Amino acid sequence: MSVLIRSYGAAETVTGSCHLLTIGRLNVLVDCGMFQGENEDLNYEPFEFDPRKIDYLVLTHAHIDHCGRIPKLYRDGFRGKIISTLPTKRIARIMLLDSAKVMLEEYRTLYKKALRKGKEDEVRPPLYYEDDVYDAMELFKIQLEYNQTLKLDENVSITFRNAGHILGSAFVEFNINDNGVNKKIVFTGDLGLKEKLIINPLEDEEYADYVYTESTYGNRNHKNLEESIKEFEEAIVTSFKDGGNVVIPTFALERSQEILYILRKMYDKGTLPECQVFLDSPLAISATRIFLQFPEYFNEEVRQMIKRGENPFIFPYVRFTETVEESKKINDIKNGAIILAGSGMCTGGRIKHHLKHNLWRPESSVIFVGYQTRGTLGREIIDGAKMVRIYGEEILVRAKIYTINGFSSHADQKTLLSWLGNIKGLKNVFIIHGDKEVMHVFKDKLDKELHLKSHIVKKGEGIHL
Ligand SMILES: [Zn+2]
Image 1 (cartoon, protein in one colour):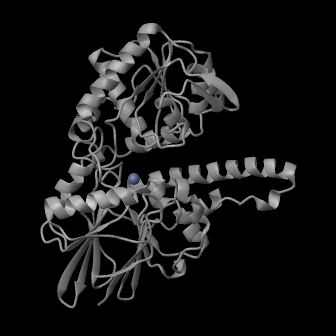
Image 2 (tube, helix red, strand yellow):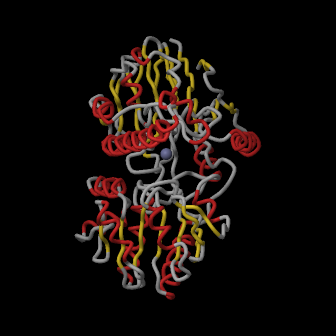
Image 3 (tube, helix red, strand yellow):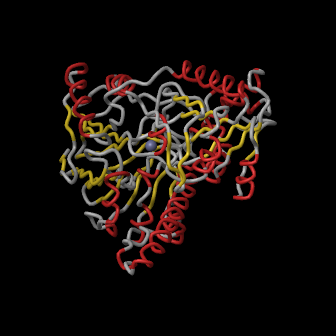
């Protein structure tokens, strides 16, 4: 029986994860993510395969670069079954609805501008609408637990293992019976770390013939988590010494919950100055509520806390501000507020309002806890801009700026190497989901340190296993 794998996304790029396995007569897609940043235009191109012929879509986790094109897949005729963990299904729903909303808002703004120039025909409509998301959600028909195996046909079965990346994230094992010989192919999706604040950490893989591995941080190592938590706690305490507010740009999923959890622990220890903590993001609030539905996915420490009847994300200082009115009211507070808002890189959303109100005030602080890519407002600020432009207004940067680098949902180089190094029987490692230069650095490490055969997968290239 032939096994053919083609990667249509996350091949020599980080985003747009999409891999098609053709095993005998079975067509299985692993992830169907959105391209982001400089590759965004690729989202609008037709799929390079026939979505109507896909039997199953196996979704590793609910980040938008892994699930973001599912509604488009539905629009283009996909009616197969989507297999994921239950948290992934719930998170995918809010992420996709948010993505549809953001695309529609962008479209309306651009359309209005184009109308004034008589160029409205040139504005591209959204990739999909909210209704497409609801339709696509109907296809999430199979939920798997970690370590549970599902037969896709008489010769192919899959098993999910805990990837320790975000809530519900899995790496996937394909076990294929090829005329009596078993072939095991693993797709990592995104791998997390061996140390996690809330969810259970990355699980080991014992045996595999082939691995398709992500390589996002294949060229560098993260700072130690414990040190970063300490740095963060110190930043909070010193921030409040001058009065003012603390603004924390945060990603809605995972990082928001991690920061709330650290603040909760500070509160318990009595080291958190008296303040008001605002989770000012509807998406982060929804994500936090989903987290609370899955305590069995949490690590021992957090589970113990829940057993004691304590909520890891909610304590007397915390307020969830869902409506625009509640959010605007925060602007009246001049000191003693910790404001968590998105987007994580300050490219849009409520965070821009909070920066506008606090960035020019020397008594306020901004704490960055996530990676800021080039070309974003967040990056401009951490690179030391003295003045930035927010909603057409020039704003001085006088607030204290802290950058804390040790929080990450992704495995770093040493974690990836030790995880792959532990796998017995590896015949070939296929490198995906990374920037080109990073992939070459990582391949070199695999050759020299682990003496493993590896290959950098090109977009659309067919690999027979
Ligand atoms: Zn991810």
